[in-house]
Image (cartoon, rainbow, N blue to C red):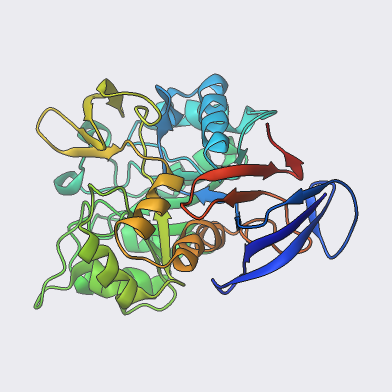
Length: 370
């Protein structure tokens, strides 16, 4: 296949009008075959969501291959071609069932399952957010390794609250085995900075479920900014973060260190109503999903729409937003050698957008999707 005349996203975040050649399921240096005229369209890599929970009334923590398939099918339909769904805070027994389902998943139609984000249970009770507090557990190397073995090595990110007992030892032991992310935490700057200095390298949904950034108490946000190896997640659904906060964060971190995520829950893709997250009831009205006490419970927005919101409503340049939703997310979970850019040798997962950022065509594993 040849895609002609598209404005093609480059790895540095710029765009260049050029042709794209596809051989089999890979992007090629040159080639022949059917021609798709993409004049006036923008070609971007398929997005990678490294932190979401569900959609279409299914949740990753349902622990079934049927639920994972529903997630994969929906995400592919909106241009998210690789997925790394997140667990919630549950017991080791429940988490084991979820990991087993993921390991046995044989995807035939949807977005590629490339990892798992283990969001709980190693978090702070004081900042649990929508996580179920009865299952919170201090960081436990043995428990993590048992779950990782059951998952077949799929866990790419593991969240911890670094102030909890055993956290620093957990980082020391596992920093070379999994990406460790600071999350759901009361940590101050000094504790967070120590965690990053010892090898943690990620921050989960920055600003949410952590102390605020302030002039004398910069907290996790300040520690992450001062640690050049750290990437941070932002939920740009228009609910979790004020547009000015998003713009300021891009100025602080630059577009090389930000990962756009959706943090979406099972209501995504559906209408307002009553749903659940981590076994707790959630009410969804528009983009807002809340527990009974008003706590925000994930989002009801997919990653492609979050990217559009960042561009159209928050003033983030398109090239920067694509970097943060495709390039940086792939790098964060160690799959950038295969995914995340329109580069010869990589998987041919490409989304063609019009000038208003509507999806016009989707190429997945080298094939034009109907």
